[in-house]
Length: 326
Image (cartoon, rainbow, N blue to C red; front, side, top):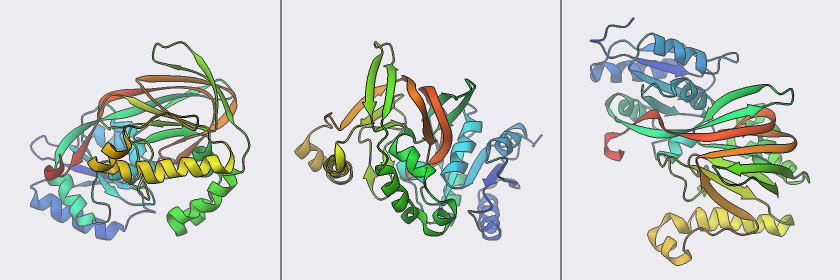
């Protein structure tokens, strides 16, 4: 075990996302300046995208986990840290940086992010947890820190070429979005929110949110908050091409720009439900589908599900943020 008198951090890094030599120099220098001990370095792999190496670091008694990778690495590390109270610091990389964006952290300054990891303060945030039932009736449980979804988002991820995504970033999703929008299949689901009676719905997309911001200034869920103890739900059912245009105008313009200011909120008022966008909040959301559907968690495809239970665990993840933004 690590000596309790020496605070120690572990860096969980995706070797395809970081310049390891440069990162080592910055981390070692910042750790020394902050009076921390020697840093532990653990590499993710295709077989272990972060959960196993994070549990290894936890078992060794580290005081801080630093995740250096994309959204998939962050989600996997958070899954292993669920309920441990060991703080997670983020070194954003990749195309999304979704949790970092929602925490309003610096995205493109690794030295500053590393300094914040060692000198920042802790903030408890919620975790989304989802128990997924598969075609063969087996079940597997995962967490999500930002969003989970079925419909266009999950189909888009399934249709995205991984090699192109690595080279072109967000631009790689354009073709996948076009292909997904042409898919006529809708989601037929029976669902239950908290203790309400079960309902049936036919929708194009279902989004479960722990927080609401996406890249490109898209505020998908204006009222979602990382530490409110609630799961935000969005059901989308646009009617044809004009319906998608209206949805895009609401999400990109009203939510992404107008509602980000106090004056804008006062001008357009609170988010209202309509036939195309329906918002709800709950602590638990139970769904059964008429057929297996693709599901995604924090931007990664997780195969097909026939049913799922999702809920929020308040304050289940501790994150390290700069002291001046706490």
